[in-house]
Image 1 (tube, helix red, strand yellow):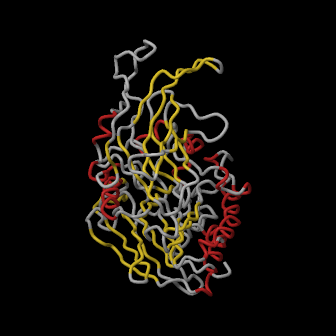
Image 2 (image 1 turned 180 degrees about the horizontal axis):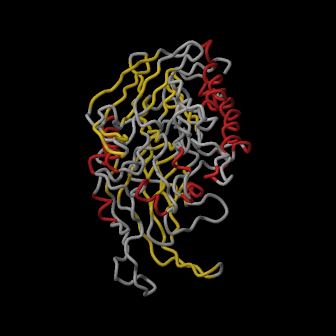
Image 3 (image 1 turned 30 degrees about the vertical axis):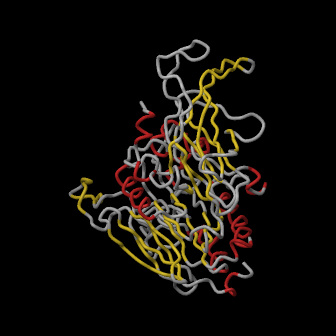
Length: 465
């Protein structure tokens, strides 16, 4: 896969216009020229715009792709001219990271609801062993980007995308809508991938997608929640090499392995992210006993109980939860995920259409906390489930990657047929007029598929969560 640095700088101008400025580039040898030590340079080192990830009130993640062994960094400042910038290298404490694919830098100690300006750079490393390494080149992206941290003072707005499945057409449509809406953050609610075997195969999905707005996440932070497909393939075991966890100091020791969960304050909205995991039982032969999702789901209950009790979450007028697999399905034949397809034909598939285990584990806590809305994905078809007795929160299932078509068996053959009920969505949430307003955008037809609003939580509902 050949990636051109000039292409990523020129791509996405419409999105970048409001949050990016030019600066004087640091000289870097062009391909074929000689570097300071007389060795020929190998071409562009930085090959993608930055990707903001795992946003929080006092921290932000920054990732970018490289073409060779490198050590990356971010210069960050509250000044647009980067005056007094602090340099943070990739890899955290002890030794900084070196790799030849993705640089991940976690910025901590930031102020809530504050605008920061940043730039990215990398040193090319020649590594021959533990006592034989040296810097043989240097490169910086000539642009200054910006982001705003979350917190109670942030704008009360979010967007959700889901089930893009490495398909650039629906992803590009969603990114265009997000650029128009300009939310404070975006939740990527699972199944960004299909079955990925290498970290390199993740680059075209997250870092160099073939869409018009190539710098889609340079100023717009994304919060990634895995879907079942994101756990398939060897790359799933190295996903943190592409999309980082938060730093250890941002999590309790008990929650060390819950790096995808988040509970953040976004203006008047408390946003809680949970991970439903794989949609098949751990015992399925196809997984060879290598999956361990059940205890993972149970562990998230203790995390969720603590998260909902945090002052900044408890005091928010609105509480919205996000996860990939639905926590509810009104159809009696929809497999609830804790059993295989049975011989009696009660369930028409042998995978989870919804997650009864997670609903039983997490639902009572969300109910007690006065959660107004749970946004999910997975089923590739938009649906809205209003509150009912015993479940006071509304439930939205986002649409999938199908562009007005679906797959059906006709005369014994699977064929594609027109289906206007299948379309990708962007779920938008924002506070206006003392209400949480939610719009489900059909990005295929540039229309609104559904619109709902919710009153603030009553203190009695969540004061003792």
